[in-house]
Length: 218
Ligand code: ADP
Image (cartoon, rainbow, N blue to C red):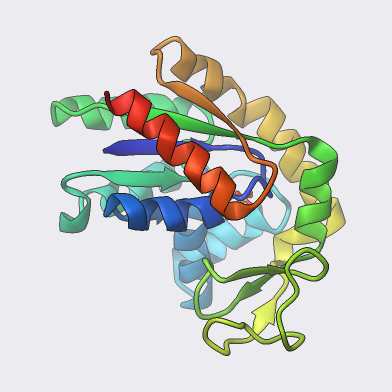
């Protein structure tokens, strides 16, 4: 299956993507994670990306599309993938369509994770992520780790993302509304969008998503 996950920052895309990708046995491709890996390896791409990410802005399309394309062309993505954080605007969506159609492929579904804005802000403000694996996500009040600052899963160090500060979050939400939300209409016109209410327990949201995908597949 070829799936795109959309939703505002803090909707739980990364958390859901990790579970869904495992259930569906397809790779989880997160452009945010790819950029963060480049930042920690101090590559040129990482330096460029960081200057945009820290402000909450989108990294320019040219480099983002090239990076996503390169990842989608890896052998593990041959039979499907779950895209998380890409596409993030209409021109990226068009580039993705073009990439897929050249290979005679198409998307199967676009899952739109819906969360009220005040909830999103609360989630992001308390979010802590493991340095070893971005799928190990905690929250200072909703999902506190047993020991402060330490990942329950692997013992890694928990940190707050630079772009999770209150000011940057405001910009990210605005960028989401103005640039990313239009892709939902773009995909609605293709009949691909399934809206998933993303409040409630992580497992409940995963179950809703799996059910929706089973219906799409039928
Ligand atoms: P979230 O989903 O919580 O907003 P991500 O980890 O997906 O966070 O993305 C973090 C940042 O990485 C974005 O705010 C943006 O600067 C950059 N980024 C990620 N994906 C893209 C993309 N497809 N196009 C441009 N910038 C991106």
